[in-house]
Image (cartoon, rainbow, N blue to C red; front, side):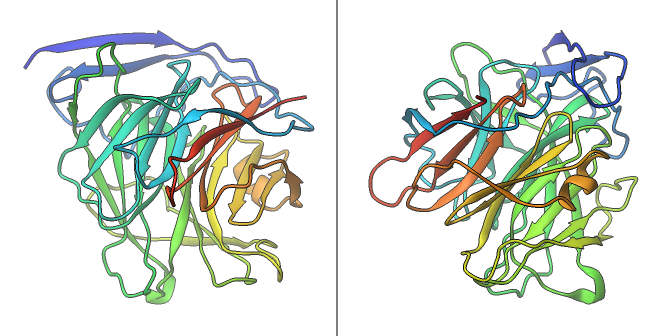
Length: 325
């Protein structure tokens, strides 16, 4: 196996608690394994340094950056790489194979495709990024359950790959984090975030129109291959009585704010004590493009803007960005 390691040193720069910068190792190989040939262990996040800036007080109206084209024809999840400027990761909804893509944050063009080994895509709905033993990992949420009948909910964890020029298709290893809800409840969900400090995944449910969503978290430490019973964190105040369903979420690089996406609007909630305090914050509307089936939202790597996109309905969807102002 031929391995090529790219080491990226991230510099801490945010208003959250200072943390020493550490080395993030991104892996580029035909199998994308770590140096000893093993799959990185998702159970031991390294709490690596995070490059971020204070979350903006206000954001401007969205601007169109470009179109998202095939093979991303049912874009559902979106997240920004924090070690590779200008790279977003995205994936299709149910019905696709177990794969995700790197796309350009400047125009939405597909840069590279990644085939996730030892994984399946029953109903992938969102994507997150967070610390793990190899540095940073991509978290893929197989969390959708429209009929509320599943017994195989899971999050797949992949070491963040090095996006290369030329965009050759790459195999990447994964570990599976199976889970269930308390009391064997069944929930549909389309929103997944990962705490940028601890690597703990959170799932936000998609309830019927007008009913607020629930936030659940994985117990720590994460144990790949062993089903975890999620812990209820809070009941949100959104969606409100006149809202449509919640379809996506993302957390700021500092962990001091969350974006919560509904079909009809986008809100931000802020906190001063990390992700869970942000979930407890009051929702404030922020600008969002009128998208036919808006499901994807992602903070930029520096936390100073955010991106949104829609699933394809008729025309190729636009990649939109709202900048700090």
